[in-house]
Image 1: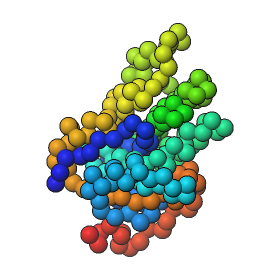
Image 2 (image 1 turned 135 degrees about the horizontal axis):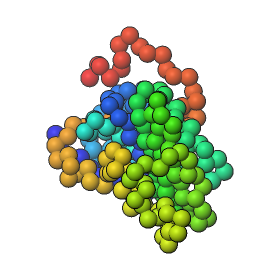
Image 3 (image 1 turned 180 degrees about the vertical axis):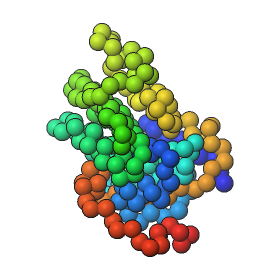
Length: 218
């Protein structure tokens, strides 16, 4: 075992409650997943730049949460279809039958978003696009922590930024920028591929469950 490797800035990631990494990989149609060290997995995820596929690193369970990090999740923050963010977390929550959260922070366009959904509760989502200086999405009841954020008040002088995304992640589940401190000894994760936009992957029929799941051969 080794320490976890932190990530978060210039990244998108999903957090699934009370799931296993294998369940997340199956539900999200992540392809060619193999065991990976944190160092290699995070490095390759950040360097993923293909137009047709992205690397995704899936963590082991961390305090009841599994995280999946990939720049592929930038696709869920669309200025032409902001509701895509809501549809993605709702579908993922239904597939995993648990609470699912999605966080995105993109420095080039200054796009900052967070969303959550659970099978038995309405979704909540927020998306601010800095290059347009516009809040494109603010749906669902704000959580108690969000009510404390000055950037979300009607008279806010500063908009949401990447540090806001990290603070919401910490309040809702896990702050990925602090993983190395919180988890000094942790198991390896998995490195796989997302070959199509993430919302399209969830629109595909779920793969039939095999009598012996592929991960149990390890």
